[in-house]
Amino acid sequence: MELIDRGLSWLWRVAIMVGLIIGVLAPPMLLRLINQLATHTGTLGWQIAIMVAYFGVFILLILAADAVKRHYTGIYESEPLTKRDWGAVLLGYLVIVGLESGFQALNHFLYGQTQTQNNAAIKQLMTGSPFALWMMAFSAVLLTPIVEELVFRGVLMNLFFNQGWLKVTVSGVLFGSLHSSSTWPSFLIYVTMGLILATVYLRVGKIKAAIALHFIINALAMGILIGQIFV
Image (cartoon, rainbow, N blue to C red; front, side, top):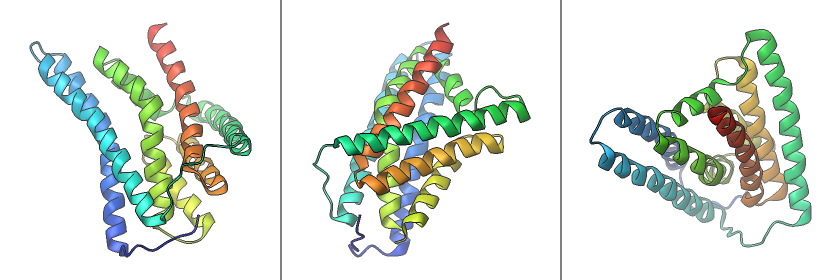
């Protein structure tokens, strides 16, 4: 992934990144608003309007982040993932599962937590209303992987720095910092997840690989959460 300077100053790059991050943080706020409205009668119209805005934010983020990535790198990815690429995805997933299991065990041993604060917050959002439940389930599996990989890997790793290790480190730490954590083991779960996602993108050179890995992670995690809610 060669860096191609398209004339964006450092200040503009920071401004673009901040704007995208604000966009990433917007959907959960809209879900909370839907849950608040769900406790009042006569608010169905408002809930539907917010639902449209919710998915609209995802679409705008995907379009904006992809445009920035393509503009700055000059790369349009059209090639499908190869068997070797899928091997990197599978290896990344196994490493994430292994590290997450270790940090989860440590988190439970030291702090008595059976789930991360981030997962607890997602579960709380999903149980707030039927709208929120299925909106979160759908977006977490199909939309969030695309948005977060385009933003934290496709844009961040190409707009800043030339050294590969620095790209991976900043991407992983920022990604982990934006996931709710109340203990250091749970924080490291998301940091290491971000580091592995960034490494896969850096090694494979295709954002599709990171998206596929993120999709697998979120799909399995969401399946577990839904099972906990309905059981």
